[in-house]
Length: 115
Length: 110
Image 1 (cartoon, rainbow over the protein chains, first blue to last red):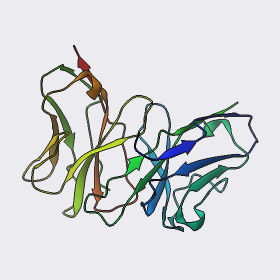
Image 2 (cartoon, each protein chain N blue to C red):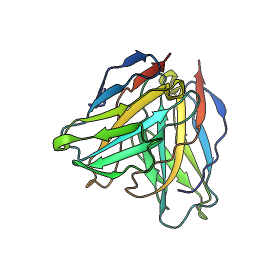
Image 3 (cartoon, helix red, strand yellow):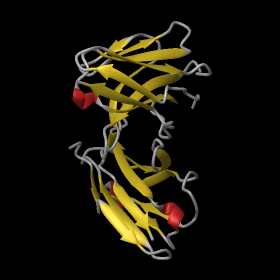
């Protein structure tokens, strides 16, 4: 257990539905990242926050994807009008950017299946 | 980020050293080499990183060639729990856009 939690761990939805995932980072960490991972591939960066500011979102896969981090604590990732191609593992990570190591701590992920 | 190339898979006997190579021939002078691993059904886990000098921590050693075009991650005494996918990433320090490739699937066998 890294201290980063994600909810739910599994989500099955029908095509066209909206889904929202939650990530709770390690409490003192100021950076929070979202990644997507498909079978047999490494994680693919989507977006990140420094405190409550979303500093990079150009890598979000489409305008159906959005993320928030109100108050700089937990974060949510929403996918609207899901498609079968959205089926993947969605990973969240956090880091304390001021340390010399800049290690990202990953959560266990949310596995999304779109039917 | 510079592109990295790793073997798709490797085997190692339990108790022996596992040496995982990584090529990063286009790495720039200010890019670090990071290693993460991902055990089945878990999120990736940081192992080690370095710029020019060899590095060692409680998990592994990182050997970077003098020209910095390649590196090797060494697990000195591999155990069955080290079976995982190992990712080598060349990235600017404190970069927020870590580009993972497909990694090397290491299988430690009894």
